[in-house]
Length: 468
Image 1 (cartoon, rainbow, N blue to C red):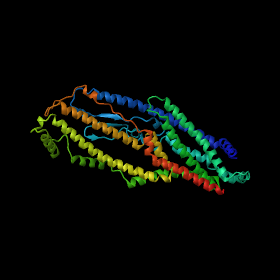
Image 2 (cartoon, one colour):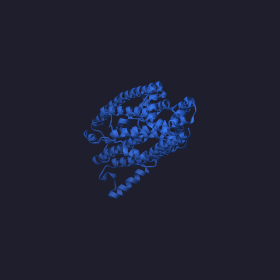
Image 3 (tube, one colour):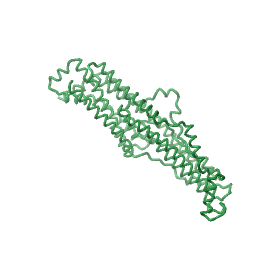
Image 4 (cartoon, rainbow, N blue to C red):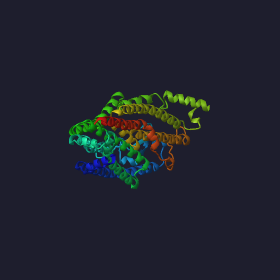
């Protein structure tokens, strides 16, 4: 009886012009979004490769130069693209793609895609994640809003019960029938995306396991929406009321709840303004060693300590150049200041993220959004990991340069220049995104919340249909 009911429901769904039109529209939109995304990322990757190669070439060919001059000359590092960013851009668009590394300063990422767009971008963009997160639930509403109400309005619910089918079997049959078209469309979308990504060259490291994980997350998200839409259809008497109620749930879940959670998180754990943050940094720096100020009390204390350790009466008698040594110690102090101040920002972000997670029970959209960005490697944690890798490289670069100055020049020697080939010995910057297992472990709260929504909506659905 379940099989016959599923076949009957599927025939009605596929015969319905609303489903045909909506499914076609979704496929068309996702095709356009993917094509636009591929073109954008091809262009971005081309720029990335050219910029990376050019930047390294400029660094390697500085010629003979003082190492500290090279430290201020600086260099850029670039964030590699993750292949699944084609499906979910996350915060990539709003964060920068490169970081300028120089002496004494930890700089923010710059040249974000959003910064290059006009005010029209405020109206939103057609991206695959927009289709998957916002449009697909609308398709589920169109398919399922009258699943139970049409039986009540047509009086066929009595006829179905007279055939001996229980409410449980009827609910299971209708749930499967509504979910099958969604499952097919979602499977086609991810299969096509996987084939495209596996054939694209220079598009970052593609991993089928990551894609399958993302696919599973969206299947669970759509299962929640399917169960909620059927629940609404089961407890309402008219299709019109069911449609309005389902659309209201969609608006609250996908638009109001995320914005509310964001506002609550920002209200409870506000970020300092950039001016305030920079002011704190400067104050913290003043309390320690400055490599450019050998007359400060911190520099004099360091000098006295070194003279005592090496049993000499003047810095010129040290086995290394004191100027390079004090410059390195100044860098270490500044790096420590940056680490402490950025750790406070990171903690504030962590508090905001925890607030989001705590409020994720109000909408299945929130855990799905975080899981999607995390698996795609486009969430804020991934960006912070890149920024921290860049800072670690900056610190190593400064030590590499200061060590050269300290060990190859003499105290008071103003004209020292490193060899022209010296710059080529600096190792290249490398950054490896987090493994999927690490991401899943970090996202276990969101995973739990999404599964909670699957179970909770199923319990509500099957409980509500006991007495229909």
